Image (cartoon, rainbow, N blue to C red; front, side, top):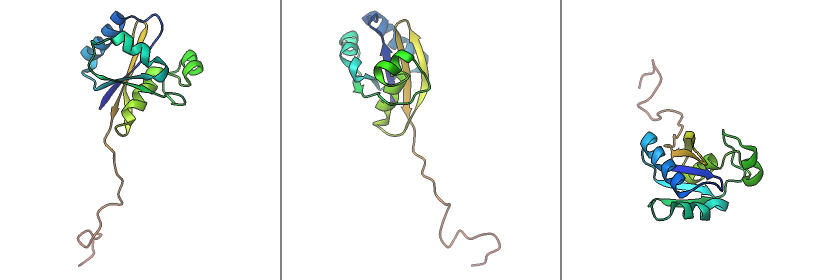
Length: 138
């Protein structure tokens, strides 16, 4: 699952948003969903209009630690980067996730992409009668 997190300011337009998403696709391939901070969801839906068929997820980003940092984002949304936090939170709904694209800026729009990763289960190694140590006879 690949999710694009989107951060933007009040100067963002529908055209800027469309160019940003098209640029993301052109450079990094398709995404499965779009996410933003809960406080920005209505504005994002308005900017996207009916031109984007992907699901838009409104997520709580407060307290999410991100590699990127903006003092404004931290003060207003409780996270260093709205786009990174939104991408991570949304992708983690589907399993463990990591940022694969940290920051793409298109004018007043910033995007990040998080992708689910397969879980790795640690084991102590093979067990059973056929897996003895060297030199053992059975």
